[in-house]
Image (cartoon, rainbow, N blue to C red; front, side, top):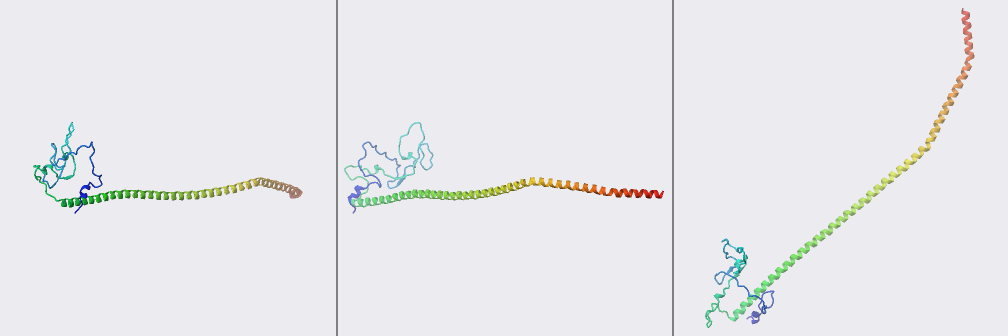
Length: 254
């Protein structure tokens, strides 16, 4: 048999302990529920309002120029289903007799049922905790995916840095190639300067060479003239002799 404390300590799961309501708290508004059999559950939002279509499902109230009075949850578009509780069905019409239509329940049966209900509420508490746990797991999963994204960003930055370093090395090689070309050009310039200096040093000698050749030619020409003069002078007596002999022969012939 369950102890009486279970009945007294029964309260909503995760809620605060029962106590006196606040002084200024307004009374709870009763729900408007259509008449149905007392042992069944009903939907509180399936009664159409005047002016709405007759299709199933709740419809919002017709907009008017003034605020409407609240008559029940059927005015609100919701999908909740509540068990029926009609106080009029359980009142005792005769206050001096056992006239209430409520079924009789012994204390032991009530304790057992309340304990069962309390245990069911604990089951709902476990389900609620698991739902909250799953929410936390999803949040942790989101944070982990963010971590993976940061890791990918980190790796991407590393690859980019490696690429930059390769480009840096390429720039170094290009610099060495440029320096090599500069050295080759400098050597060609030096060689050209030396060749120019040599040619410049030879240029006066070439002039002197041609002057010497000119002098040699003039000397040769002078020598030829002298030889010609000498030959002429040596030939003149012979020519005179030949001329005289030719004259004598002509005279003898005449």
